[in-house]
Length: 178
Image (cartoon, rainbow, N blue to C red; front, side, top):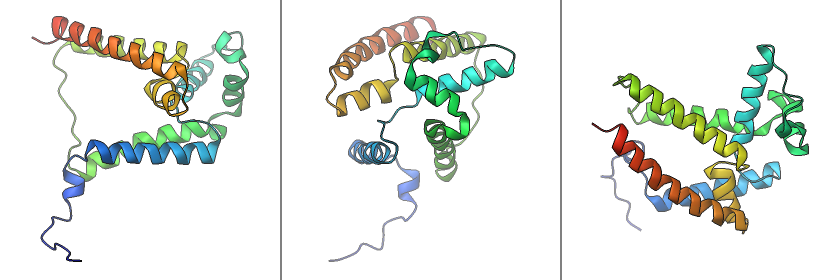
């Protein structure tokens, strides 16, 4: 077998990976996550817990909220940050993204173009977070993990994810792109 010594050794850090590579790596991470934690991959529950922990630090009380009265949500919330595997996974995703951007020399702060951009991004993030909370998961937990576990809810989520992306794109082009 001949090895090509002319391959740029840093090309895997500078160039985008193929969709197939991404799909295989995501599938491997899903299998590892399910094997180690006993739960499918998800990120939303930890983000909800983070918000609740900050809310309680500021003097609020979430004990009467319906979300935290369900057994799975209550267990991860009461375990605290150090007892929540999803929180550690989310921190790993954030750090991994930053490290990847730094290695690829793609990390940069972008100039904010307008107040309209800030409002739209904030409103979009809040709506996505709220939607993920009431859908019992985001595109990873409700969609990816749902479909990979042959759940009908994953396919229903896929249909509405597609429809929402069409609506969001139309709103984006109408109100934000000058």
